[in-house]
Length: 236
Image (cartoon, rainbow, N blue to C red; front, top):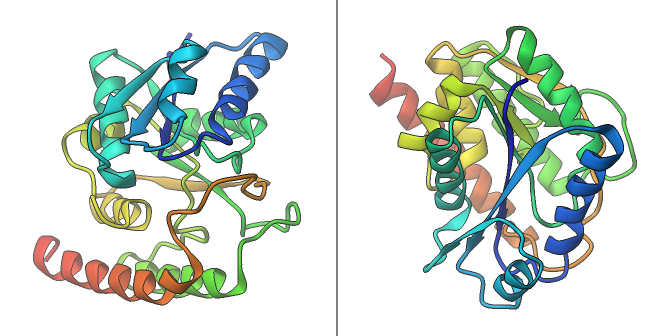
């Protein structure tokens, strides 16, 4: 049986983290699965750390807020050091549905290095994020396809499963800025196989998203510039 680790990056998720953790534990009990969990407490300033300690939730405390990139790289280092076969990135804000982890893992086992939980390859569920963010995702998707000839529909999805080979890569090198679209792009340029699986996501139940609406244009422009720079400098 393959060892599967669910990595949950958390920054100020006092409203969501316990419920998110319990959703995975309850799923394990109901389905007789063995998904291990590690929460990366990314320098939270609220009661996230206290909740993790009180409920004895496995976690790593980062002294300073490193951002999603630094938090996830910590999780991948943990996965590598503990010899996990599969790592699943799973948000701590309640947006990701534990029932879809199996779908990602099943596709990963066949012929993929990383599988993305996508909101856009099929019309599943009501929550699709804002129109402005969807437009930005579509533009980023266009530029990724322009340089790689591969289409990724949900370029910013933080719901991903990866195999041991990708765990090793991410443990030693992971983008600090815009980690999901940039790491997807880098993997495609290096010949890794990426697939997408349709998933339903939920609205955030509490807390604040790391990408607020006013940052969407800034985010999109910087991701596109990063894609162009990486393509020119690293993969001639």
